[in-house]
Image 1 (cartoon, rainbow, N blue to C red):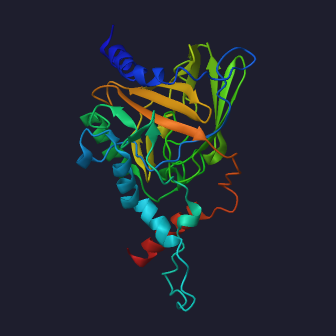
Image 2 (image 1 turned 60 degrees about the horizontal axis):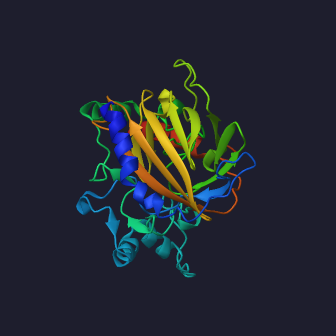
Image 3 (image 1 turned 135 degrees about the horizontal axis):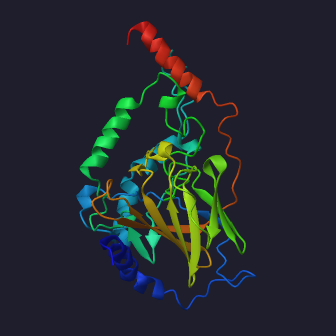
Length: 330
């Protein structure tokens, strides 16, 4: 048995006891006799992918500690400030000070810490114990190279989210991570496929059940996903990631996932309104060891339109601003 396989097996064995506590609840079945994962789900939470180093190896906190962390959360504080009534006597904005960015009206990151199997979590990552991605030196150099190549010369230098190619960060995954807004998913399944519609940019993950991986020369957006049922858990292995999706940045996480990486996801419905989403990421060059995380999905509202291109002047404005700075000599 390889070290990677042992690490993945150990991770799921450690948390098997938690899942066992849910055994008295039986997941509904589809007409094909497998667990019914269908419906609308949300992963919105102020819990982040990686843990604050100040918390060390403290994965679980008490309810009182959770409320304290929620009160101290910057996004929660900003939302509270933005929700206050505007001063009717305020003067008009001055040129260059229009405060035209997003305010709390536009965001929906969640307000509470993630709760997994009744435990309040300080990070989604559960292994390694410090809740941090075990990047290698090679990964650090890759980050540096990406930042050096980023710029404002043309749209190709801007992130995929700004270009409306895919959602921001890793919201479409895999792994599927919550971001600042649009953290909803819709799952639809039949006998041969499971489809996950991602709210941000309406990306659709088409997971083939008991199929064969595509040829290595084909690198689709969101990778190539093949799934299988292991008892009541849907296990999905994704490889062949698109090289332009290697660097995934959002306000709540930054992730380097090279095309050679593999992601193993596990979807288990553990309650009427809860689905446990687990994943393990492996790549010998990018990480010193496999790393694993758990994210609770809760029943959510239906998905609304995510209009990215229509009426969106962000990218032209960004490039025009850069040209103006060049004219001004900045």
